[in-house]
Image 1 (tube, helix red, strand yellow):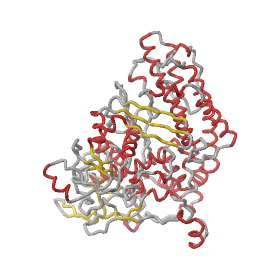
Image 2 (cartoon, one colour; image 1 turned 90 degrees about the vertical axis):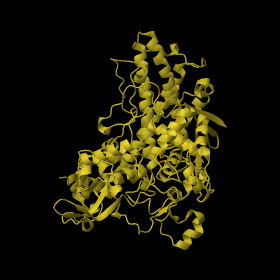
Image 3 (cartoon, rainbow, N blue to C red; image 1 turned 30 degrees about the vertical axis):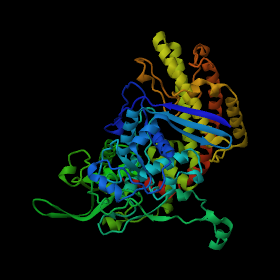
Length: 625
């Protein structure tokens, strides 16, 4: 069995809170930044290594005053913070296929490990089950993974192309009950990417299909395990239930319905101080109905309203946002684009407030984006429309956009991904985006080599050579990761590419396997991180040089640097050898990416622009005030 070792060293944690996403500019920082993608991978691997079980455990009390509760209540899928810190000092997870074994390893010092756990706690991936209003993590705590944390592990598991049968127990439990709303981030810079369309989609999902009016007397929302959808879906076939049961057996299983173990009528109150409040994302934000507000002159009754605190809570519980600061950024964007209207003094200070006394309502534009019907909203102008029959709208909108513009817009890309998930072909889009990321990394490497050739300062030249070595190994590791996940014969994803391309990439990767690269000590040193792009500005001060990122799979300009003069630290291979291998992989990856793009362009995209989701988004755009 071939063993490929992907190793990682996490040096220091950089705080990257920011004001507004569209004005974020990455500063010059020393050391290495753990980007959001790497943080979530560390969390997922930690949960996998902990191998949490559903045995009802007695968590240790973190305060003496709460010690009594540890003997009266028991909780599944818990772990001690101290144990997690210890494991993260050498966090290693191995993915084994039939002929290939790949290992991802992180080494995290104790103080940094605890800092990461605090970030996971603040991001609502973890909570304290014996004190659900506790918002600060301590080393003596026993914590429990949340529905959002479970969704994070589940998404990581799917990204690795693994089957349901080998999923960890927590992912197959009632904890896995949230479809997280996703925001893309820039690389490098870790900036949130958004568009006006994405905010319309967000407000639609945040408000839910109907008003989620909170009441202490309401029944708990029923949830289902998201992983149950991994079973083969044949509901669209015209078979009787007897025939389906006879021929398909266990593959035909109804979704299991649960009362979530996180449900508690007190902790679902929008005014509650519970650390987490939402354990399912389909019902939407909890709102108040017919709430009375008193003014100096009279009382005003608002049909549906909600607090800034509830918005911030939903964003942290049900999206990939990782801090309160990021929820404030999104809240400010919702105000900026006129989707919310403040109705109390606490909410009308010009900026979004996450306070429980800051009340908001949907603006007319927000009502247009929201899918509540006109009777609920009390509007006469917002009648129901049949988007599928709006042929003129489809013809006008299809002339304005193409697949390229859809992929460039975060909102349209989100809709397109959802559409492809319904069509059971989302792996094509995900693979294409990952191949494009590899192309950017490879182009950056070529640009760094070009800069190296023009430097006269030997000190800077030597430091840049070290970055080039690291970048080359990152590209090489990422290439194998993409190959094993999407392109090898053992891949769980069946990409629809031609037989000739399949054989070509197999041949290229087999040649790379037979080389001495993977046996080099450099490939097993704790410096290779295929998830992180080195930023040369963090180490070198190039006041005049600019490193542009070329479009995906555009052949980079030739570099005049003499590659054999850059010897890798191991002393056993030259940079020219690995660059030659990367160039061969880059060329084939480019052909595969073009093939996938063409397939989406002629098949998935025409269906998408006829879909209800797309037409609804365009209809919102054409009816803006």
